[in-house]
Length: 163
Image 1 (tube, rainbow, N blue to C red):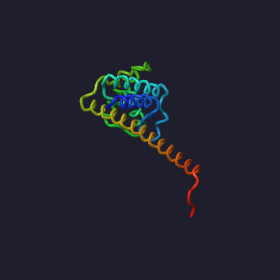
Image 2 (cartoon, helix red, strand yellow):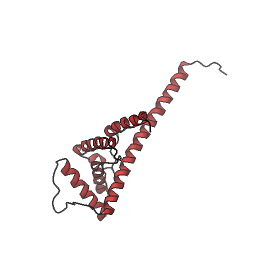
Image 3 (cartoon, rainbow, N blue to C red):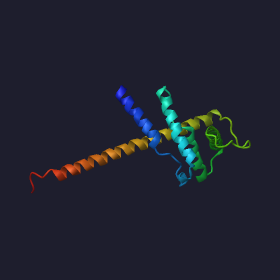
Image 4 (cartoon, rainbow, N blue to C red):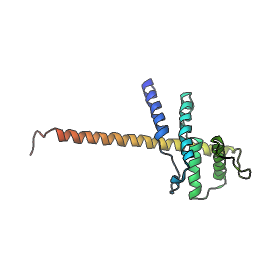
């Protein structure tokens, strides 16, 4: 990839960190996200961009996974593994951002290999969904601008022949 494309992608990633949608589980609970969690998502996305500059692969953040699993847990019951994953990532996120400590009776300190794989797959899926939404939004904006330009050109240019 040439430097121009890398620079454009880097700028797109920074803009995306600030403006990409927060992916939540369908079911109407997306508006219940706490403001500090929304801010944590943006800040963690920016940190992820900095890590990507150093060669790490871009992925969803802990806060994004926490937000998604929070809305999923409000919509439907989760099985044991996903409950463990949610308690692990919620405890990690809440502690990292200084909100509270998880109570000892529900604190999950570590995940088994399958659970960690599922968490990493969820983060990758969240990243893919939000970048796809950004690309779709960009395509729609470019299509609308093109249609407006064509309409303006047709309005300004008189028809040569009218039948």
